[in-house]
Every structure is written in structure tokens, then in C-alpha cells.
Length: 360
Image (cartoon, rainbow, N blue to C red; front, side):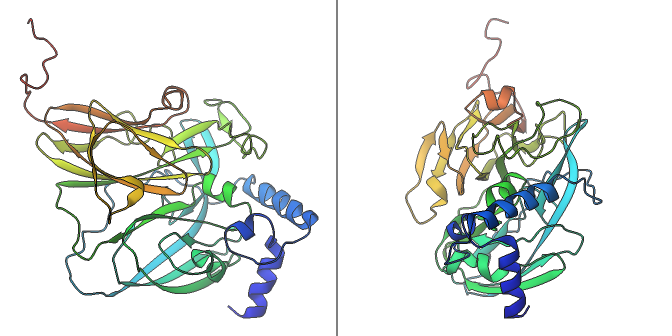
């Protein structure tokens, strides 16, 4: 993509306000331009898409294998912006924005010292410009400026994964809060050079808010509501894009056996609300606060705050069978807005640890 075309794109989507926050610009545009950009984005967002999807909820087990090498390498990554219409819950449709058709976007897994060769695609059937900001990237906007492209264009970016940890990536064009709310966020895991401790299972989840013009559960197509977003009054708060997506009543729970261990990667896209991430009937045996893999872990933590723009990493053990509900302990979000996932542990009862019928 030529420099002239890139400047035209940036002018067309507005370079002030939110763009400057993401490092996408160094000058402010007139307020009228920013308002026009907002109106254009909202209009495009609320047009029913020709592309529909059966689901946007990512498979929580769809995670690259742990790194098994001890030398740096070049890792090729392709992220594709996809605007689709799908259900938040049965009978309720919404226009989502995604990376690779899923929420959260795919986990990118590299080793400290690796070089990431990114191809970022914005298909011509999309209505809006998109880009990607990696919190694991030293560079202006985390690569947002370098990857800003209109529909029908592709950008390339190369960066070195210099520091270890689990970090969010997200769309960072103007009106980035709308794009993130609609699903454009994911995680890049930069494993430390010595790797991570071995576990039996790994799961990847992402929480975000959805702001619509109707009440939760009201059937039909829900449009994005720009007025409720700055008030931070979402219609839904969900994990992996859909109400109660990863539960036995929807796509199914995550499955383990008693005695297993699991590592959970949990990213809060936001754009506004901090999650109080808690496993009901369990604890985080080891917690890497804010995804800091270079720091000491915390032990046996009941609930951990995960702020917007943050990935946390935590491990669990499953001594007894039963369902472990992963929730935001701001519990109205669970009971009324759809924020819950389930890990189902199967195995023999352990009455010495938990006995639901001690007098039977």
C-alpha cells in the first residue's frame, strides 16, 4: 500500500481524538471530522451484513502448542478482519467485528526473542477500515498506524517479541471502543525463554461488553447503541462473544478429569468494565497478575481483577468432580447479562474433600 493511499485512508477515517490515543496520529483533526467519522462508523456498523455466521464464540481449546525450542525463530501470523452478523443469544442478532471470525481473536503464541511476521487483511466485503495494536510490540501504536487499511487492502508488519508475558491485541482505529466492544480483541502470548510449567489443559477466554438499542433478550436484530457505551451501561457482558456460550446449554463446557491441572488465559477486551474473574467452587492455584510471566506468582487467589486491555494467566487443579463456573463476580453481569463459562470435571467422588450428603 503506497504512502499516498495510507494518508488518504487516515484522512478518511479521521486522525484526531481516539486515533491519537492509540498512537495512530500526531495531529488532531477538526471536531466535525471526528463527529462525521463516528456517524459514518455507526451507520456502517448497524447495516445488516451480507456475511452471517452460525457462531462467533471461539473454541477455548483452540490454542497453539507450547513452544518446544530453545532458539528464536520467525513466526508468520495472519489476522483477518471479518464483519459478520450472528446471534448473541437465540433470536437476537448483532453485527460483530472479529479477527478471523471468532471472539476473542486467535491466540498468537511465540517465544521471547522471536520475530513476528504479520499479515493483516481487511477483505473488500467489509465496510470499515481496521488495524491491530499489539501490546507486546515496541513501536508507534503497537503497529496500529502501520496496519491501518481500508476494505480490500492488506498490510504487513514485522516486530520482535522482546518482553515475555500475555498481552492483548485489539483494533485501534478511531471509534476503537466500538470496534473492541463488537469483538476485535485477542491475546499474544510471549513465552519466557525457559518456557512455562507443564499442565494438562490450556483454555483461552475473552470478556467484553455489548451495547445495543434493545433490552437483553428482546428478539430481533439489535443495533449498536453509541449513547449507552460512554455511560458504560451495556446490554450484555459476555465471554467469547455470546451469552453463556461455553456452558452445557450452549456449545458445551470445557472438559477435564479429576486430578488434572489447567492453565487459563483470560483477556478483558472491555472497552470499559473491569472483570472480577472468579472460579466458583475453586481458586486460582497460581496466578500471574496482569499476565506478567516474569514476576512471582500469587497462590490460592479467590478473585482477580482483570482490567480492560489486560490478559491474566492463572492455573487450577480439580480434586473433585463437578462444574466450575468461571464468572465475573460483579454478579449482575452473570445473572442478567450473560457472563459465565463452565469447566466440567469428571471422576470419582472424594468425600474426604467434598461430601454433599454427609448423613446419607
